[in-house]
Image 1 (spheres, rainbow, N blue to C red):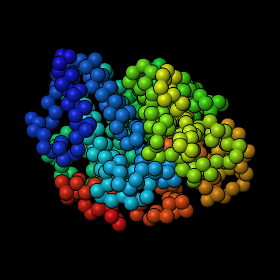
Image 2 (tube, one colour; image 1 turned 45 degrees about the vertical axis):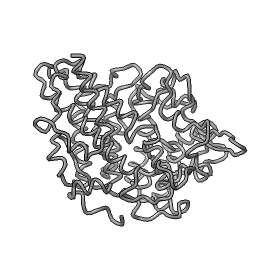
Image 3 (spheres, rainbow, N blue to C red; image 1 turned 90 degrees about the horizontal axis):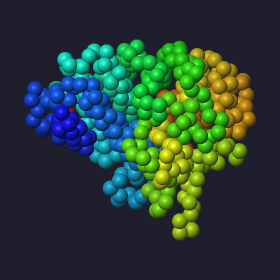
Image 4 (tube, one colour; image 1 turned 180 degrees about the vertical axis):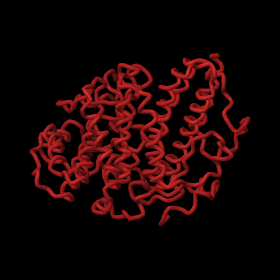
Length: 456
């Protein structure tokens, strides 16, 4: 059994680093990964599930590492300044200078890693459903968690690329030829999946450290989903469920927000080993010549008295030059009290604020926004702001609150039709940059991805 589990985990790990075209060439019986013995008992199935979380932490859209959206979209928008030459194979320059194209390596990596991880998730879901030795009640939680992970990948991809293939099987022949689904239809399918698993999870965590998502996490993702669908009343309802949950409260001390015991955390990821740093600390804290730093645009976005700038941004002087970096996570080494936070309570507040504004309830929204401002040491905004003024203030506050966290800046601006703001600090910003291009190698393999996104 241990050998079978090891073989399965190694296979999924290898899949994580293979591109989509390589997946099509694998000879697999019946078009599927043939690993049924992994699903003979719940312990080995849960071990396979842990591998999906490892993929999510180390190399996905939501990773705090250099391949995650915190870095990629931080460079793409106005949060980070690139310090690598244009010739660098890292591709940071193309993101920072808004010179992306269908052959850009960061774009290809986001696409291929996401679909490879989705493939592994679908294999897990199929294998667990097909098991006739694991009780139905024991399947519910791991299946729900896998479906949530898949929903998060698709929700991110739909916002980045627009219309995308929505794949729920491991049939590689079918998947290699599948066409695109309308992005709004993808969001509806995601919502349907989330509604299904909401009933299967409880508010009780499987780990005292909140390493696995619970029902409140599903409610938050549903709130985000309905915000994207412009169903603001539903977004408000689900955001309120999270905000009123007695399990959570905002931390008054900004230096405890990203500690593993923070009451504001809904879901965080294990670091994998004792004293290992978070991917964010390893990625953003500057010790030697950096690849990127906090931009002047972001530094200037903070008021003088904003305590988030004081507590969440730091600097180092190297060869006489001062570099600024995100310092939300403090422990570059000997880490014992920090984990990578995926979702925190403050996000529910901002979903609620946005949903209220678009329901002509700006006064209520500003009251909530002032709660965030007051914690940062800032005075109240006027409750008499109109809708557009309220949106602009919300976006400014969100920028200061969530910088380098999973691409929030890009998604917030896009959702509110404010991406043109970036042209003030990004001279190469164009309207077409609202979407990423489909990777060229993927359109060659699957012409059904065509036509290419406009302008590329």
